[in-house]
Image (cartoon, rainbow, N blue to C red; front, side, top):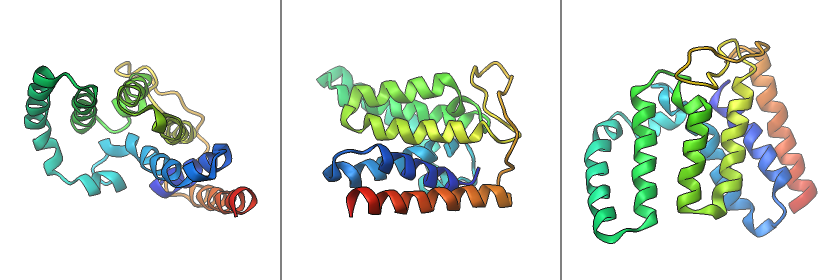
Length: 184
């Protein structure tokens, strides 16, 4: 699926599930970013472009620095930073639709958020889960049990196809409709 399709699905689901209007802006931002995160392992992805090629090279020194501060000060936030950088590092060295599209990647991402900021956990999980769910419907599927190579798939939608674009448009319209119905 296209990045904009992943984002539209996540935004619609988040708007639908958010109860408190004051939480809507942060929930939408977190869900949108999380919906793109699994594709960070793709050199051409929207999120990877933002991080640029130097992020991977900076991961190891950042891990060392964060490890030093964790040892010295023992903050959970620093542990979360180390884990997040590890996640990014694993994404950068692995294949597309590898670790970040697996159950292990999902659980690792969930653990990182649980350790750092539980208030953003629900919208982050909505974004990440909708990404994996929509990729399940592509011919490539998702390797749920990575590194075991078997992909699970229901091959109905090719990435970038008219159907992919229409799905993104439909969820974008649903997002707008939910916003108007619930919050405006």
